[in-house]
Amino acid sequence: DVVMTQTPVSLSLAIGQPASISCKSSQSLLGTSGKTFLNWILQRPGQSPKRLIYQVSKLYSEVPDRFSGSGSETEFTLKISRVEAEDLGVYYCWQGTHFPLTFGSGTKLEIK
Amino acid sequence: EVQLQQSGAELGKPGTSVKLSCKVSGYNIRNTYMHWVNQRPGKGLEWIGRIDPANGNTIYAEKFKSKATLTADTSSNTAYMQLSQLKSDDTAIYFCAMDPGAYWGQGTLVTVSS
Image 1: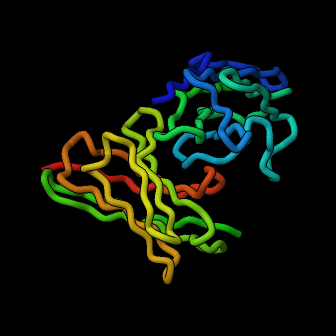
Image 2: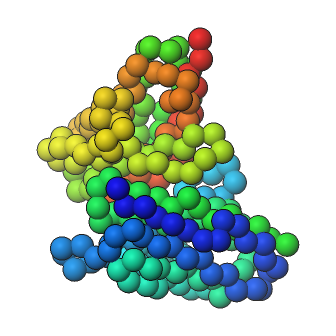
């Protein structure tokens, strides 16, 4: 199985500060289609996950442009240019290239 | 607007089965894959499997092959997951999600207790 390693485990940031979350996979996530199925989701406290980014860097339409995703092969990054209060929760990366699909262990973002 | 509405919380006794549902509105499930994911108390997310509602083809994570059975009813636009031989370790919230995680249900809490 592809192991997804997320760092850091937690972040405590003030509003307006930037955030960066790393996600590394144990195998390349570049698929035979030429696409890389690396996604990011946010789970706010007590809620189901919400979509953020798919295929490494594509933001869903409702996601603010302060979020960005980058990376390739086995190393990926989620960045928030300026953290806002609504960004608190646990961020997960997950891969859809190889079965079984696998998730990172999550990064908890707290607001100072 | 696409919505995934999951069935209500379940309390199951050890050794029994439960069947969860995920009704999709605003999108034809024939045109997507439906995934199921669990989250044990205080833990992260774990992929259970996926079904192609158009033809019923399924793929499971190895550890869930004898635990979960995924089905779908395209006439009602609903996906189902049956969990069998319940154990205390199956206590978790179970989410359905549309490929590729674009939409998620609200989750169903399954509690296994005698």
